[in-house]
Image (cartoon, rainbow, N blue to C red; front, side, top):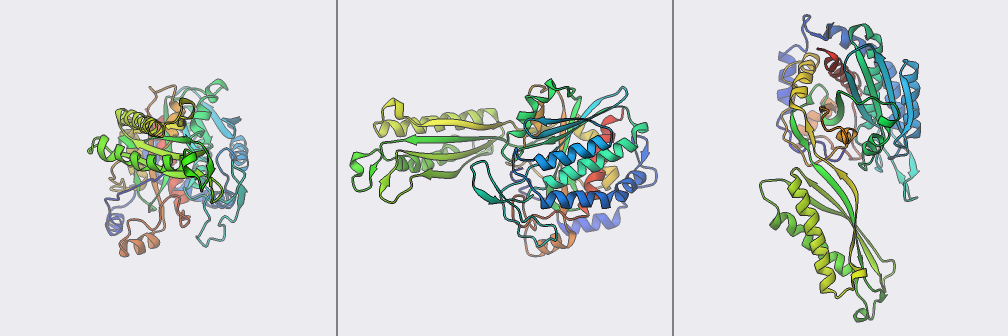
Length: 450
């Protein structure tokens, strides 16, 4: 996930005060007929097993669409629990189906992939892996976004749902999704899984790590994460010797000109009261000092909440590109070429479902633990599992995973967080394993309740 949280309207010290003044649960609280204390005890007792799974996943991260080992672990665990398992869905995705009588069909998703970052946290189970990425380059890899925790939470919840089969009825679908980081995984699975025997769900749930302290979560209705487009723009020119630029059409100059003009789309074309982001993340052109190349590549990332803003961004990029081509007297066959690689919609939590799930989360975590944070420009692809079924509601929430002492130290230093997602210092405290599992269990059980 790209940028989970941007503004935290909560302090660590107020969290401590709330934790100390409010007991987390009372003996009378139940979720789908089961005492909360019993559910928490089940998750606590499974912690040694889950920590072993988590540490193993953390030490062996896999890049998008390369999650063969991880999906194999999920498949093995779910088969042992009695799930019907479908493998190789969307290349490396895996789906587990547990039918338990008549009732709603609830889908729960956990993403599996890692990113190319060198881990900096000195953990005994830290990743030291280096692998070849899709371009054949050897890169360090780590779980710097918590997908290892997501898988662990799902496997922990799965075990308890099997134990509690007498307390719920319906069909539980667990999705181990590849390639969230590049935004292609959910789409790849959605294109295949419903044709491979996976039922269309009545609702979809999911969770993600966030750098808030263990014990809190964030679950709010409405738009929570921005839509995203990733596109490549290639500028073509006429190459030549660096000493005779007048005989060339320099694509590097064209690309540099475009980079500057693109920024005016946000500053001068989009409405200032509606958030829009345009980032040029990479420029690739040329090899030698004295050679003007015949093409230059720009890699862009766009974020928005309104459909009209997305359309504005794409239209103005095309207009700027064409204008540069005209001003350089290029023939039509050398006009810039745009390729859209990723196209994700906004993440919008269903209001009624979010309210329902929050009832269970509050019982499990205690009162005043649901953070109030505005929507962010980060993006997700979990909603793309329902791209052909937009009528299905979904709820996606964030779970705090930071060590309390580490978070308190960062707060005293004036930092919002001790680290961020995609950072080499990203660290899931082990106490977050039973906590996240308990929230996942609470959410799924509540989804099955009438």
